[in-house]
Length: 151
Image 1 (cartoon, rainbow, N blue to C red):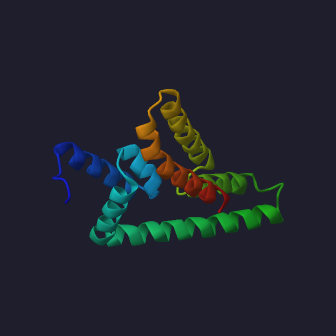
Image 2: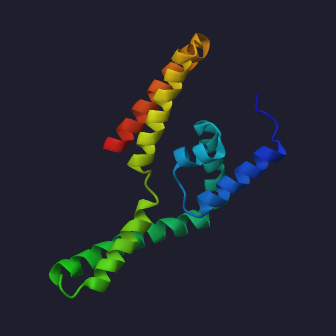
């Protein structure tokens, strides 16, 4: 049975929708910012994809065009490296734009460290019940993030 939407949940969902429409499409990042379960965010995204198909198509078109422009700029810079300062700057800007769509390995590593420290906290405070509850889930999450970093 689903919980009734509180005003707080509605406000959080609205903020996450705005972030998502603004280009933050990584569910893990949205879940962390919202303080909500990953499954909840996936449900929200599914709902938003149905509700905002034009915005999604436009964003995908933008991503594709940015990737093409990056390739062209890099090819031109390779041909004429001494004349390509403007192209190098363009390529750098385009690369930064594209990276905002990928979860940062550094962020994932910090999350893994946090999850490990959470288990250490449970051990240090002799909270066996919480450790038993969290450890299997945390191990799965940490392994998922490690695979994402290497994939």
